[in-house]
Length: 193
Image 1: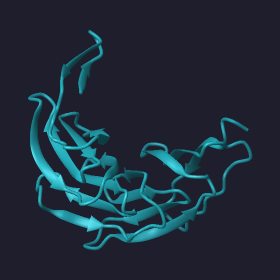
Image 2: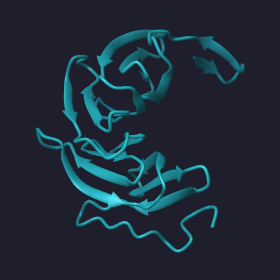
Image 3: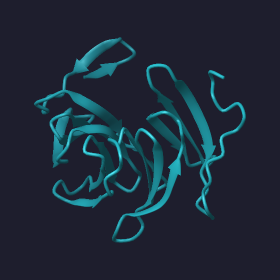
Image 4: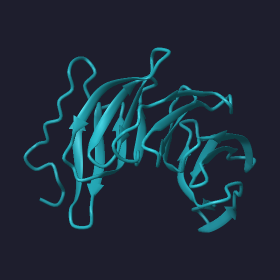
């Protein structure tokens, strides 16, 4: 559903998925919305016209979606992999990560050529600049399950939340692609310490 927050009302319901919508993302230029669902599909939508543009056969239930400024969409999936699509070519899956140990619960682009994926026990960095997607780092976070991430290009930091039924934290860490990445959490990195 699209909501107009000024009038606090739903202005449009977008329907194309045949199961629950589990992920949404707005493009950096605010012209496109992408939805991902438990049906293993993703749809791009023209926000102004409220019409579908393309559909993407992801092949596994989608848990998270991100869009970069270069027109790529990443979908983190239940089958323990993330897929990267060209938003302008609906049948063009350009990359797929290797299977992880757990479902990819969060994926986020960093600049135009890096992708972070996260699951229960690790955070991985992938380089998209070549014809193949290459894992550049596998960071063991011991964070008890990453639920969501956000990366800031301006300050080169990544924030992620984690939690299980009894353990909930939010972490902030530097992003460094100039050399080996090492995750060293500060002493008071949790908002719940």
